[in-house]
Image 1 (cartoon, rainbow, N blue to C red):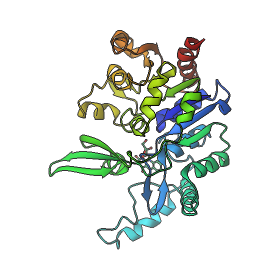
Image 2: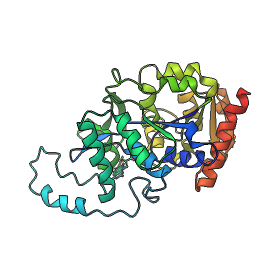
Image 3: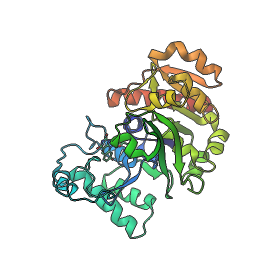
Length: 322
Ligand code: FO1
């Protein structure tokens, strides 16, 4: 079994490559749910849906989220009610775009959760509906909300993740990150860590995609106990993230926005870090953090490149094991 700890876009692209080189039935993606939110009364799980849609080949490639061939008539129609909505209301949310086809997923998930189904059960139903052969597991079925404390002229303010990421277009400095519910949310996947030949930390945001997964009780200890079989791919290349605010967040929180900074973050739980060829000169500094360093092309411009990256990533821990 290969377990992949996953956030959104970067992880989804990696999985799209991984399924081309190993039997998908031997892969389980454990996905961040800290981004999940209630939008227009619907339970939205962005990272689970981005992984599902990408591996199913249905993702909108340009946006990296939501479905291709999409229309926005419901969102346009919702705009009518924004003009009459009371100030304190969250109804008629038109800044978080839910496409007409994408809505079906949120309607189904919300109805099933309302019937008392667990997020794991609903996720498996959605997975099967899209014909995915990989396993797909939310990191927890319990409430867990990533909260971002931002810096504004008027002072500090804590907002839910999507309000930071989409509402504010992650255009404000971050002062701290909090995980509401982390102390009581139960991880869904600890047995998987012990049973897996390889645990891959996908190229996702180390702080708000992988961080939530690690914040769950027992996860860091379990990964550390299996450290030799844990391999990560740096989402920071030449000091920048391919997509999203990971580099800025690392800097704003006083960490190094580089492959070395990622090695330092992951060193307690991860024995090997795969970095991009552009950062080859950092390999010795990564190893100085106590993490074995592999250098290869990590920019997944095509599923073929993603497949090569997956092959190199697995070889780093599977051959070592032999
Ligand atoms: N990201 C945006 O920047 N703008 C959006 O309007 C938006 C809507 C959206 C709807 C469904 C979904 O699954 C994801 C969506 N995302 C949107 C992306 C989402 O905010 C991110 O994928 C994650 O939360 C961060 O990885």
